[in-house]
Length: 519
Image (cartoon, rainbow, N blue to C red; front, top):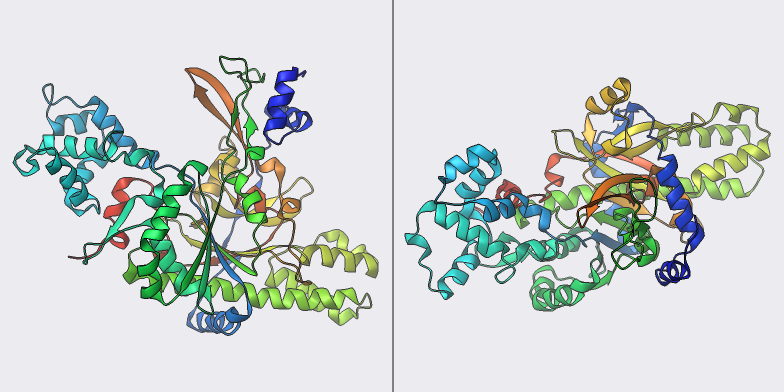
């Protein structure tokens, strides 16, 4: 593969180099191996079940230690809300009242979501906002027939000249309407939530990864709500933002694995998915980092429950970290008794779910020490897992690598060979799935930050097929932030209740109980 001078300049302008791009093209050619899952992680076999006593213990651990730790909440928030309104974009563009009734349109196109949207319209937090827009234009909404109301309501939401919700960042959309007639965004709800578990000594630090074009909008929103949120919580907020770096973009190729070129001859690069955010996470400095997606929020009455389980996960992190650090200091002495070896080995297998290789038994003591140090001295992530109720998303599995080593991983269905009946059955029979509810320890036993890029499985990337200007192309996504990007972290899965998982993937999710206030 030879690049022109213009190609090389373009590649360099993105903070990349030709060798890295050639390696990406080689991945397209060779393909990415499927993940080999050996079994689903289940309760007492990879997933910890909580009870009243353990919840109390872990809460006490966190509450006793939190003021001695620096806390940070990390929220991936760069996505636009386009996908939330997919069925409504279709409806607005296709529906013709002169040709068919609304019910006939719904039945013909099998758009059940539209029926739910129509019935729940008045319960959306932006209902009054839309009526005000229509009123300002002289529209008497209440007198219109139902099919006109629904179409005009959706059009006003989505039209670029109106509210343009589909092109707004999801974090700044109206999410919840309170009795005080205050409408909150997901961004605001994250502040209230952080005050309950990610604050220490009256300060809560939050970091949002956003699109650079939306920076002013997020800043304006914070300035608008800051005084009220700080007065209501008694907490001061330190908010920071970062953007997905261009150096994480990946090359797009044609179906025969040649660089896909724009009409002007330049190479097409594409954002590489949420795995690119590892670079953003890697720049942050905190003892405990809470990770949660922007759309996974609830109205205030549920927040105490959410906060409780976040604190529990953090308490588990602190307990395991303390023991891990203790053993690492012991191993530094280089003179280890047989009893201490057994104690550390037991902690690895039962405390950290790390399976020790069969070769370990043959090692001399010095090699055993090095092996144990390597296994213990890693970033730690505590991952909440909820019972599988048919929601899409990755799940917790035991995974076997090419050397037959087994480890706990969060695996997406796209990483699994569904044509292999055994692998497909293991996926289908999984008992839990991943709600992206993580608490991370990113410092070592000496207080130094890990370089998180040293713990990535780069083979856990994704190749997807897309189109650009009507032409087919192949795109490469980096290993997902909580998938391959954290493959070599110490991983602990903990069962948490379903109330902790309330994402807004479509606009109709806002009609569910955790997003509604009874009026």
